Structure formats: C-alpha cells, structure tokens
Length: 65
Image (cartoon, rainbow, N blue to C red; front, side):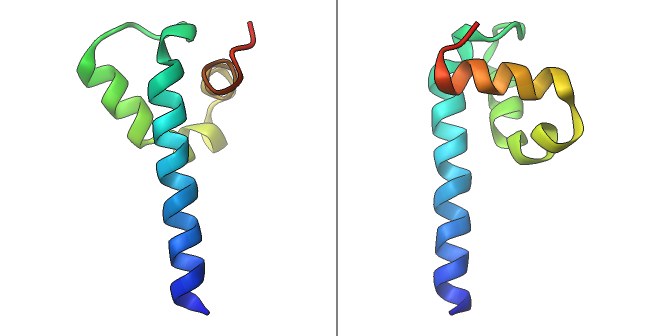
C-alpha cells in the first residue's frame, strides 16, 4: 500500500518537473539553467506558497497566457 502510494507521488512529482521544464519558455521567469532547475525541482512548495509562481506554472503546463 505505502509502496504504491510512494510510487504515485514520485510519478506526479517527476511529471510536474518534466512538464514545467518543457514549458519554462512560456513563463515570466528569467532564463538560465540554474534558475530553471531550481524552479522546476521546487515546484510543489512554490505552487502552494506563491500565487505568481502558480500562475506561471499553469502557463508552463498548459501553454496559457
């Protein structure tokens, strides 16, 4: 049970990292490998804590403006 839950959480996290990384060019964030890596890896915390990041995350995932 816990193993399956752990796998699901890892898949969701990795999917978020991948989708945000791929759509990073649609955001208002400054381009740069370090910035892109940091913002991609910290997406769960930043989505919960920051409205501006949430809006940019949505842009990156869905391609919205």
